[in-house]
Every structure is written in structure tokens, then in C-alpha cells.
Length: 638
Image (cartoon, rainbow, N blue to C red):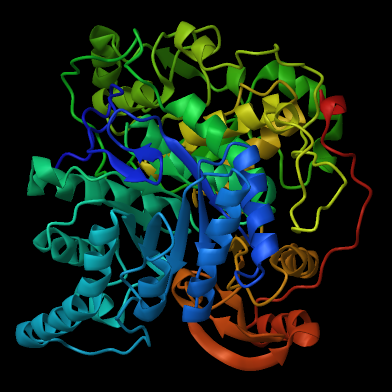
């Protein structure tokens, strides 16, 4: 099955255009950037202000949650207030569980988002075998509940997102297809078939998951299924990694998921979900679009490769290689994916190796006997393939090819026994230079920092960024580019070692290397967090709570903790988490082990301590090591 036009050469997937208010999605339109406000939908003034603040920083579509009919009814006043103030940004109503709320919201907004997993369907983790007749009867019931919304959207000429979330697949889908990308796709297609039967086509699909590997596989599988179904199934796609969390880790995880698909020409609108103030999502999304969405192929594209891809795009499996040893470190086979540095950078940090904690270099490039190749050089690759000795191989610098395509071609042509070293950038190549910042040149002494917002906090509750120039920092560019180029290949199963050379500060490059491995799920070396972005459904302060939980648990290496503001995606997205902290009611928290709730209605003031107790009960708690004074990772790390 073909999920994109050409995995070696950029070509944007051709889709029909749909309108969301005055904004076109798909067709010849640019990739659209959207976000979601975080306040209570019943607070009309705050909702208006947050929406306007998002629009001011470049958000093209704004989503507002409508958990009840009462909330949905208040969308009338929010939209009216926005239009009276001259703000024409399209408004999307976010619906979960309640078809009645969707019907009310559809009277006032430009688009309605429904989640097939919980719209007129159930999720109680009930195991049940469905006969074909029972399954068909359930689909009939869903058609009955869904048809009125489709008819209303069609009558009003408004759009819809059929938005599947990995964390909220219905029991019916789980029992037939499992907790899989296939289940996500089939869940969405069931609703799409109903819409098409009613001659309604103004919809977009999404396939969100907190795990980039699952998210990428689901979108690829959806694209392939749509291609199989026919040319008129050319609906636009909305991309996002849900519950990405906060800070650098969230930006890396989002880049791996969203950037890898954009680089393949897949996606028409994106949302970066951060557990931060929503305006901070916009520069990340815009930079991803700038880096990886193009209007036409680059001059250096691989036009007609004789090789097919070496990996299954719909199911992750690491490329099988032989084990080898370099600098006393084993790599390849089932060994850890290793972190490589250049000799010049190693010398700059050699005196402080013992202070780098978990961010230590493992292999020095110049000492590793690495074979550098142009993946288009079939003669050189054939010679290497005849050699019975496994070699560590990489794409040579200055090769004029897009990064992802270059390493995919290398993996396709190289004998699988040879391990591959991935790079984030090819130094000196023209195609790489095209992707660099086009405004001011990068300051080589700039330390790694997050976006610095203005100190003022308006009544809406958002922290307003002081300027887009700060948000579009050169390190953000480096982080997103490196995360996409390396992370997408890791999710393809390619890569046995990585080298970040687009960041000049060696301490920062090492930190970025390890965090990319963690974000791709390729090497877990620290506590892993899944945290949803805030919205009107959230039952506690997500940013403050996430900070408290991290302060208490960040020393638990390899433990995965989910922090969810409500139950919409909570239990499902926590399926591969060890422990979960979920808002159950105002001021009350439920604690989970895996996707099973084990502690209920804990007062919020006690919940972090009770979470620690739960981790102890299950034998995964260790006491934090005594604090030692570590030098900060900054420009002085050179």
C-alpha cells in the first residue's frame, strides 16, 4: 500500500479543499496552523481574549471545548463577541461524549470536531466478542445518532473533523481491531462512510496519539487506505501528537510525529499540543511548516530510485544488523542506539565528562572507522556489500540530498548486516543550507533556552510572548530540524547510532541527542511523561501540577507517568504508561496503574504524595540521589 507519493522525493499529497469559515484547508492552500484556548468555555470574556491573542500570534483556526450543552450554547456569545471586535478567525467546537452538545455547537461555529471513540459509542474497557450481526447493529445505532449532526453541518455549510485519538478508541473497535493504528483508521472510516452516504464531504481526518510511532503509523495507514478507496477519498488531514507535554521534550516529540509526515508531503493543517500557554504552540507549528512543507520538490531530490524502502511504514521494526564494537562500546543488533560526537567537541568537554550525568558521549566519530558514502553511488555500496565484515556506515557530509531521503536510500541499498549512523544535518550541503534560518545568521554563542515570554499576564490567563523574533529562536530551528530528521528515521526502524552536528555547543548537542532518542521511544534514559494540553475540560492547573509531579519523580529513570486533565483520553493514552494522574472531578484526582484506576477522588492537595506512595507499592520507587553541583549546559560547554 502506498501512503505517500514518493518516500524519497517530496510531493505534497493531493487533497480536496474544504473551508473552515474564511480559511481553506487542503487543495492548494498552505499548511494551516491551529491551537486551542484553555479557559472555561462559560467565561465568555476570557474565551474571547484568549482567542484574539492566539490570532494575533499567527493562529489561523481556534478550537474551543464544549463538554456540555450549556457550554455549546455559550459559543454563540463567544463568536458574536469576536466578530464584533473584528476578529474573524474560524472557531471549532471540540465535542466528546455528548451528541446533544454537538448539535447545539453546530449552530454557532465554523467547524465541529467529534471523536469517533466516544461520540455515541462506549469506552468502559469491556471485553466482548461481537458477531457480524451485532457489530452491524452497533453501526446502525451510531448512524442514527450521527446523522442529525451531519445534516445540520451540511445545511449550515460548516466543516467537521473526524478526529480519532489512540487513547479513546471505543470498546467495540478495541474488541475487533485491538489497540492499534488499524483500529484508529477503521473507527474514523466508519463515520466517514456515514457522512459520504449523506453526500457530506466537508470533513478532515486526524489520527492522534501520544506515541509518535503509533501516530505516524496511523496516519500512513489512513493515507494508504484512502488511496485504495479511490480518488474521491482525497480528504485533508489534520496532524498532531496529543499529550506531548511541555518544554524541550514536547517540542521534540511533536517534531518527530508531525515533521516526519510533513516531510513526506502528508498533512494539511497541524496543531502542536503543549502543556503550556497556547500562544507558545504557534511558533513551533509555524517553524515545522517552514522547515518541512514545501510547494515543490527541491532540485536535489531523488527522482527515480531503483530501490524500494527497506522498512514497513505501517508497523515499527528495527532494522536488523550485526553487532559491532567501537571505542569499547557495542552497537547494532539489539544493542542501545549510541550517541556519537566529533573529536573536536569531545575535546571541549573531556575535562567534565564525569559532570555530564546521563548526557555522556559514547563514541568519537574519528576513532570509529566509519564508512562514509553517497547513497546514490551504487558501485561503492555494491563493493561494501561484498565485504563480509560489518561496518558502521553513514551518509557523507556535503551530499546534496534531503536528510531523510538520503538515509532511507542508504538503508534500502546497504546490506542489513551493516549498522547505520544517522546525522541531523550534512555539513556543507546545499540542500541543508536551504533549510537554515533565512533571517539573521545563527549566533554560535547562543545558549540553549526555551522561549522567553513577557512577564505580564493579562486577564485571559495567557502569558503573551514578547515577540515572534524571540519565539523563532535559532535553537528552536535546530531542535525541530534535528528531531524530525533523526527521529523520523528512528521511527522507520533505521539507525544504530546518532550524531547531532547542527548544534555547535557540545553539551547542548549531547542533551539534544539523548532527548531525541527518548522522544522517539528508542532509548529511555530518564522519566518519561505524557501530559495533555490544558483546555476548558481540565479539572486542575496542568502546568503547575506537571511541575510538581516532575519535581517529585524526575529521578525515576525508565518510569512513564501520564498527567491528564480529564478522562477524555486519560485511560487510553495511559495504556503504555506505568502510572497515571487524572482529573476525576473538581479538586479530585484518580490514580491509575496502566489503564486501570486504582485510587479514586483523592484531594488534589494530597494527590502527588499518594502518587509517590503508589509507585512505591509497585516496586518502582527509588530514593533520589544526593544533589551535586553540576555546571549548567550552556555556551560555556564548548
